[in-house]
Each structure stands twice: as C-alpha cells, then as structure tokens.
Amino acid sequence: MTKKILVPIDGSECSIKALYKATELGKFYEAELTLVIVIDSGRFVSVDFKQDMINSSIEAGQHVLEEAAGKIGDYPFGVKSTYRMGDVANEIITMAEEGDYDLIVMGSRGLGVFTRALLGGVSHKVVCHSPISVHVVK
Image (cartoon, rainbow, N blue to C red; front, side, top):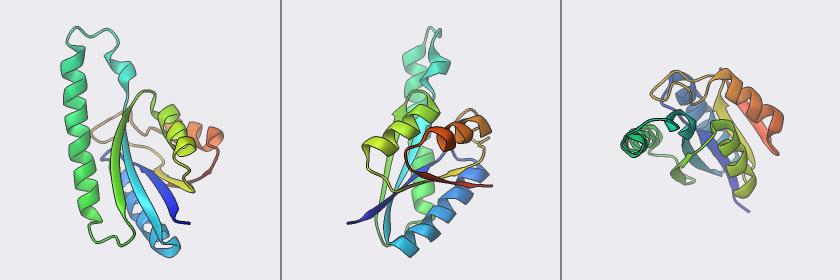
C-alpha cells in the first residue's frame, strides 16, 4: 500500500522547509506527497466584494502550489496539489482524516503570501487534534 504524506503550504520560508523535509521523508518511505493550501474563508465574512477576494486568493494559492511543486519537480513517488477553503487547522485535520494520510509535515509558522495560513497556533492545533502523526519543521 502506498504511503501518503500531507504537506500544508503557504509560500513562507517555513512551509518550504517543511516541503523539503516531506520530500526527504517521502523518498525514504516511497510516499506520495499531497501539497495543500488552505484559504482562510473566515477573513471574507463581511466584505462586499467577497467573491472577487475569494477568486483572487484561489488564484494566488494555485500559484504558490505550482511554485512549491516546481521546487520538487523530480520527486519520484508522485505529487498532487489541491486547495481547500475554511478554517486552516480544521481543513488540514479533516483532509488528513478523509484522505487516509500517514503523516502531516508542516511548518511551525507561516508568514508568506497567506499571512494567517500556518501560524504557530494552527500547527499547535493540528498537532493536538490530528488523528495521525504530525512532523513540525522549524
């Protein structure tokens, strides 16, 4: 059975370090990687031009995912990319549960394109509530 590693990405230096660590672990375990960016939909609650902001965030998120996948383009065991919307920590945890992942590899904090995406509180929440092991990279 193929091993699967979930890698939340936000474009920050810390999430890119997590990406490289996931690649290293993935090669050891011959695991497929899934890169995910979670767009925090909570920040769009009272905005009049909500759909435009969501579309812009999705477009920026797809760009971040493409750049991240490009950094590991020669990864031999498969790389998937996706995005989700919602509460960042909850979406990561839900995806891990639903996708039958073996490990989450994530940065300890993110301050990149999505400034709220992988803040320390998110990684702490994922560690505390995830049904699977979490490897946090500093």
